[in-house]
Length: 253
Image (cartoon, rainbow, N blue to C red; front, side, top):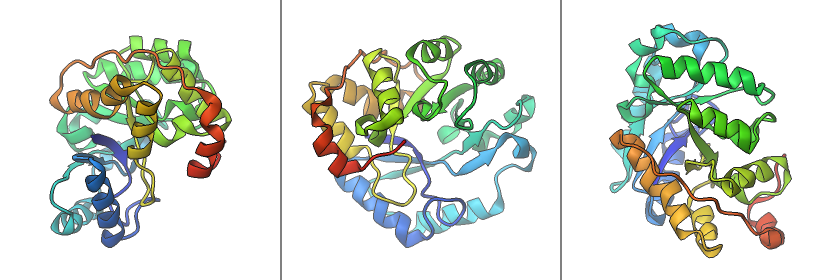
């Protein structure tokens, strides 16, 4: 499995606070079958010109020295689109996922659907591929809105653990899956226990082995190889598991 969204670059944002904390998470991911992760600390469009902070480079060197074998560490950022982007973004190749043309982007929770569309179009016009982080967090997200964003050239990245949570975010994630609008899933780990492993297994238990494989293996791999993604078939999630799942994940609105 490949995880393209995590906050395991130690001590640089609200994610992992130390190398040891990151190493423990990476070891657990590797032991569960994750072969590569992209470290995506937070960044903002309003600070594009400042580039990658030197502290990030230093943190990556420290982590690389102690990271467990068997899991590849890649770099990128999660770019908050707090203002319009320009071709200035092209001068920062370190922002993209693993040096590809794909860039992980996010918005504030109450962004409007037209604002998302406009921002995604700006990125596509630069020749980049916007990977929309956790669309289920945005109140404006519906399957039809996601279809519009995908038609512009964006990739939908759902947070894996949210798929099986109760509440509005969980329902939006399940709606995306039910309509075939999700492209990849990632853990969005912040130095904690979140991973793609349990959601992957639960999707398989729901008869979604092919969907799970596309979300966690084939399509993330295609992004890194800069190849076309495969369409992910619709997968309605049965809700009878939620009593058990609440014990596993808790609830989140």
